[in-house]
Each structure stands twice: as C-alpha cells, then as structure tokens.
Length: 138
Image (cartoon, rainbow, N blue to C red; front, side):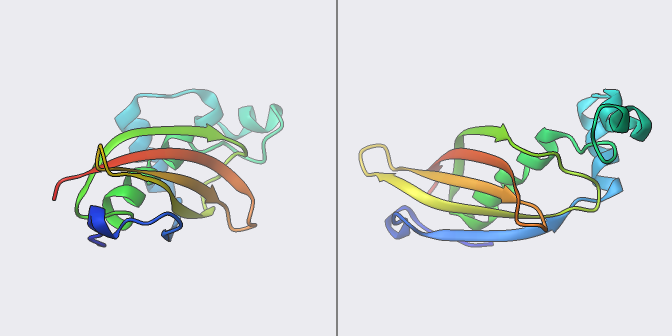
C-alpha cells in the first residue's frame, strides 16, 4: 500500500497495477449486486448479441478504481469523494486488466486531488475510463 500525503501529490504522478478477472470474482459480484442479466450469465445469449462470451459486469471492472485510490494513488491517506466511469469495450473472464491513474489536478483550498484513470486489457485496448476525486485523512 502506498501512502502519499497531500503534500506529495503532484500533477503527473502516476501509479498502476494489474489484475486478472476470474470466474470467482464474477460470481461473487453476481451475488453482491444481485444483477443476473443474461449478458453476464449466459454465454449463448451474449454471443447472439455480438459478444465473444458472457461479459464481465462493467461495475466490477470499475470497482478497481477503488483499489487504485485506496491502495496506490494516494493509498493509505485516501478518502474517495467522487468517481465516474465510462465503458468503452467489453471485459471477459480471464482478461488481465491494467488500472492506471494519473494526478491531473491538486487543489490546496480543499485539499483534494483529481485523478484521471484508465483500464486497459491485455491487448492494450481501453476498456474503462474514469475520473476520481480524493481527499486526504492525514
């Protein structure tokens, strides 16, 4: 876990990590969210609609923005204030995602930082974009 303080946050500071989406993650998200849309549950249904297989929940992919802020940028001193996501390509079970955040703005008056975030798959394709605002607990 990183522990950047507000004073250490500078525009351009970048952190990233990777994770492979597993069947277990997908199943646990199904249980947590109660979302049983057939696009996520039935491979044949998803394939009939032009996808390679059933698709991973967009919000499961976007949930890695929480880990980005809480563990990497800034990490320990983070208070997640706002997060928005836009979804660009489907994610499938077995995909390896790289989650990258880059500080785009630091505001002294509110002691907040804005982070532009992007998630790419193992092919380097952008699958999710995000904007995160964090405050600091220190």
